Length: 131
Image 1 (cartoon, rainbow, N blue to C red):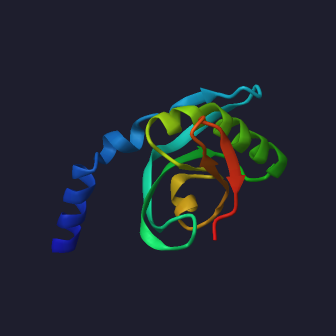
Image 2 (image 1 turned 120 degrees about the horizontal axis):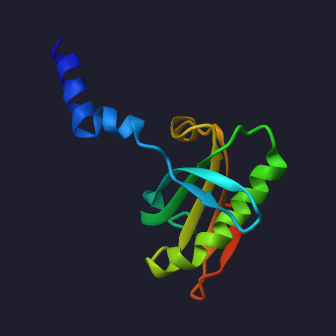
């Protein structure tokens, strides 16, 4: 009973029903597709690019996909990275992760298709595989 009340209080504090019913933004991409953005936020992890321990921030973008068309997902991931790379660099990010996912929860459990990018000082993204 107490756990249920605490859970409900937490759900309401995090936005509750309003957050569930707020529509996701749709972004047109330079390749002609339009995506539904699930997540657009700063994220942190505890390793840097070289594998050393330390807190590192990066920009995370997730968009809705059926995950049935890998060619289209990869094309949209690249188009989205090209679209936001300069803006991410201007906000102080050195890395960007772009994921196609059925929903944000699936992405948490690794059920997504994603790519990592390093952002150089000119605001250009270069794909890389993390260690």
